[in-house]
Image 1 (cartoon, rainbow, N blue to C red):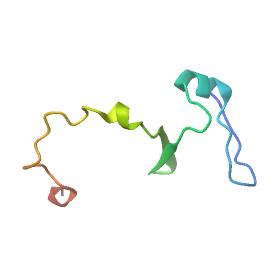
Image 2 (image 1 turned 30 degrees about the vertical axis):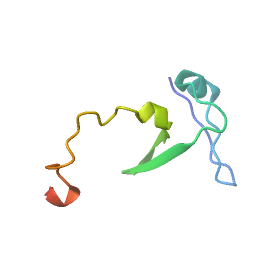
Image 3 (image 1 turned 180 degrees about the vertical axis):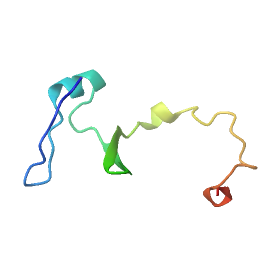
Image 4 (image 1 turned 90 degrees about the vertical axis):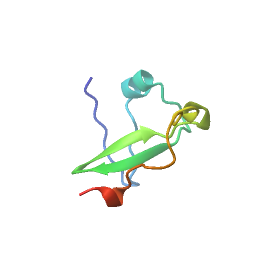
Length: 70
């Protein structure tokens, strides 16, 4: 799949229909933008129901923090 879009003078981009349909994105859906090098990763913000059980079994102690990394 290859689709392009143009940034408008109001700094808006319309997501091509083929992408919206393939990803099942709907109008009003919220997205997060994560800078990655010279590009940006765009991901839909999940609903709380989708996050349920995500950290099941995680230990609240002994985890590594960003400060622990080199």
